[in-house]
Image 1 (tube, rainbow, N blue to C red):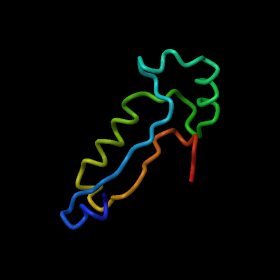
Image 2: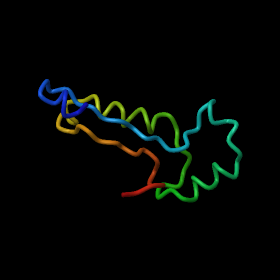
Image 3: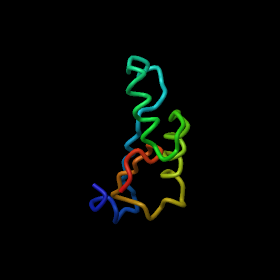
Length: 80
């Protein structure tokens, strides 16, 4: 889609969030939360604002030349 829409100056990206503290993840066992917390470069719980900030960045002119990308937002749990 990025190649198809690029000529129209439309960017296409995706965000891959890590385990985020929200109502929908309350069922996840504490051991799993601890696993992600201990495996992150930034060792604190991930909150919705972490993901929101990445999404807002992709909506700005500053990200106008970023397209066709998958942006992991996981505090460094997975690093490429």
